Length: 121
Image (cartoon, rainbow, N blue to C red; front, side):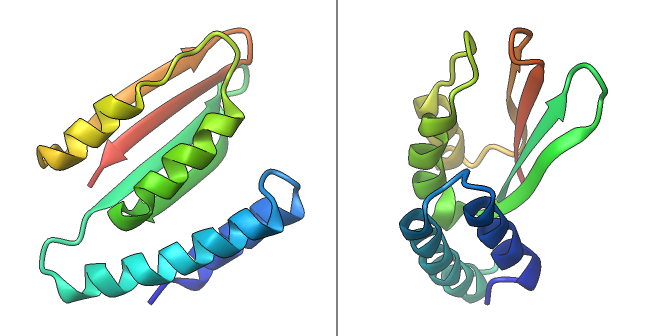
């Protein structure tokens, strides 16, 4: 089952206007479905995404997602592009398919003052 923190993070994104209520509902449904799949298998996998403010070093966003949510998350993430930074969705999907672990991507956007790091755990 999805943790209370994960549900609160999604609801917080809706409240802040970062995603719509419909997107939040889909994320909550996918989170629940992903949690059921992860609980069934011994190799539960997670994606951790962390956004850091380059000016202050403070973490602006830090979330762990079940791999089952990744496709939904990648589609939603495309809506929140960071200036000149580019993101290769296919690179992430290939890493998941190939069973990679550890940091798989790091994207810095000096114009936006942010660094995004992605890990598979």
